[in-house]
Length: 308
Image (cartoon, rainbow, N blue to C red; front, side, top):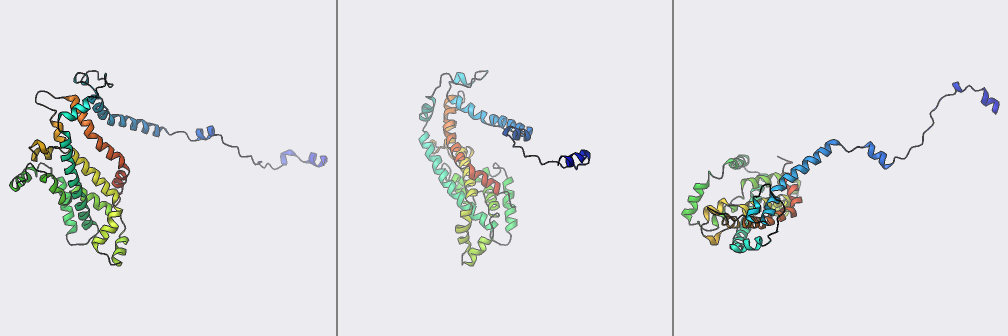
């Protein structure tokens, strides 16, 4: 055996690479093989800076609501109140009838939301799911109306409501919501309805359904994300509306929250701590509603852009 082995020239032995055992990769090696991309680090830094800049006015509002007038405008600015004047909140909310303002705003909100949700979904359904002559032309005119500034129709609308006796009432702020619900809301809802398969409509018609049946049992249950988006937009618009109430409402007992904030501002003096405290309180419902419905809000906005 030894002779055979010695007669073989090692240089003529075929060199077959021996299989190497697979080495286990330690977590440290795996981390080094996939380094954290620099682009992502830069992206995170930009997002953090953008978030801080976006939150800066909100932080300024909150800290100013807990300060005295002399401390708010100190330069360089102080970000932590010293001392914390928590009394600004109850004093601001009791110095003017905010309960009445809140109830007036709540009544307008409920009536406008009901009108916008109902009429916008009916209008969008006729544009998205029904076939009728002139549909595209009328929809184009509807989209074109979005380019008209609010000030263009302000005077004719005011004259119309004055002739109808609607001044100093909630009617000018509520009734327009029951006539279509707004061009933007119709557009948003129509775009969302176009993403729903038409096979569902045909199945409902084959079962003897009518367009109203399709709308109620097929379209509306599937359009909840778009409806929530429209509801959030409408709520914010009505809650922050200042121009409409100041034009049509002159009696203080009909004032809304937006007009109530204006009472803290005088010609010669403004109570900034009370104004900031009242503004923070009024802003809280909007922030709360946005955080509750943000998932549907993002989903509705995303799906409305899929189909044109």
